[in-house]
Image 1 (cartoon, rainbow, N blue to C red):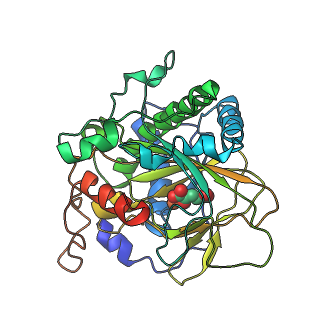
Image 2 (cartoon, protein in one colour; image 1 turned 90 degrees about the vertical axis):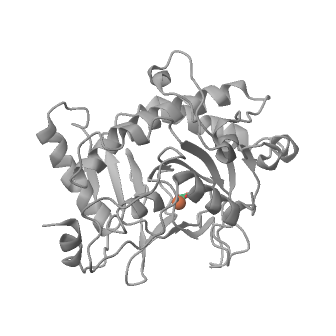
Length: 339
Ligand SMILES: O=C(O)CCC(=O)C(=O)O
Ligand SMILES: [Fe+2]
């Protein structure tokens, strides 16, 4: 059965998000990988969201980055504004409250953020990754420019990059599984993900207890733009919600020991919407601060987002104009953050 035919048989709106066990993700046995890929495929076709457990990222690495975030966001505002993203040619650095407009109908996202991209981390084994470069001059400034670290906190950079590299490694293990899930050779995305167009955002959501105001969300409803996002969310606080096809917001609780993986628009474009890039939002209605860390993992900026065979048919023609990943991300950045 082709992917289009399989899709036609699915008509139930999802009501929960599955947890997938990655214990065997490093296996060299393709049959083992195929079993994991089958679970991933179901989740991708249904909601585009799943949790992963036994993902291999050390607790200490996560504790390190969370401590670093707490210290960073507690700095006086003027020190954070010294590295505000608008001062950086590739918009790395700090973003203040309300500066993002993920939902253009909102008054701004009620979150602070810190964004950075690939940088080598000495003594860590994923330094073999080459930095993002683009053959397209227009986009190269976006991925090549240096990160903007806070000088006051030297440990912040180390802790953030340690987690970045660990999450990047996990992301690289997932691409072959997505390829298998789509019935493609395992290495299909290899030559399309050489430069790790992966951006990490450290997010801080101040508490928003009190009467619910739908207009003030921590992050307004949106889809992500890349292939997939690896999201760590702080345990113990319910904030993230995912919209199903019946217009219901389904809670995506923070499950201890897991990460959320959600697909973004690049995968929706590769697959002509057979893999879902689903609308989601988050608001911290608790009385304590909440932290979250997405890593947005895309293909290289010069890669054209063309539909994969099996995802188009005469009844399901290609829904999207073919653009490069860089063109797409840049257009979304402009619409959301004005740069
Ligand atoms: O904070 C969260 O749980 C979600 C963040 C998110 O959706 C994003 O940054 O794209
Ligand atoms: Fe998102």
